Image (cartoon, rainbow, N blue to C red; front, side, top):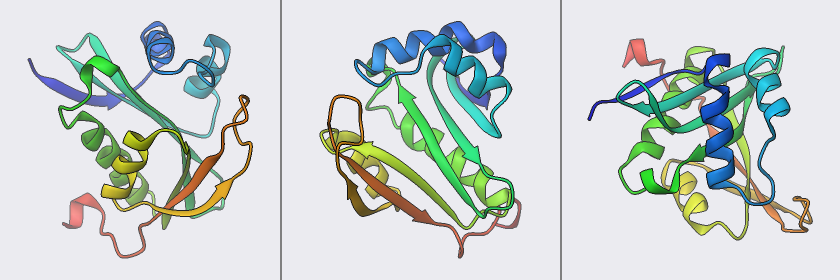
Length: 158
């Protein structure tokens, strides 16, 4: 079955809401927040799908005007789709977008009790900079992680 990466759009809202429910028990986004992120936020949302209709995961990269830093605001891969290298492909797509836009770093926050996500980010160059105490609504701490992009070339120059 062919896997495709593409920019998410408002027609994907139902699928993204389903992914949120499948992936997050506490801190998932609601429909209204996802709709805002897809239509009004300054950033990009990408998804990975199978057979052009079955959404397996998505990620949102927020951009700040005048800043060379991007924030990986949400990263979600359906539990049944894990272990196939899809998270790495989605992460690489966002990294290429960031480099293409001239960003020099990506940041993110990840729950300290999510070792699989921490491992994914570390294997892809992110470094833990500091622990954020009581970051999530349930009191869980987060790692603030950073990926430097200054030495990276845009995909067109590789």
